[in-house]
Length: 100
Image (cartoon, rainbow, N blue to C red; front, side, top):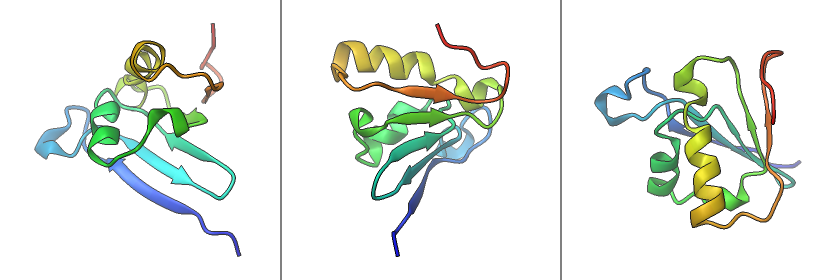
């Protein structure tokens, strides 16, 4: 049986009250590693919990509220200038989610 690990990196409200960070859930399977939602504080949470952004293959958005997708611009800037990402990153979500 393959093992799936789920880790809540952030589960706070829209303001990250109480230091809980905005919504960000890491899912790790034997074949994939992805995030469900990526709030504005997600990179900080990833750093705190030792998650390498380059190992994330996909970001899945549950809905288009800013506290669930607001970290994507920061994630992309970090990927380009800090971690020098070379792998493709898939971002998917509800019908109004569009790529460039």
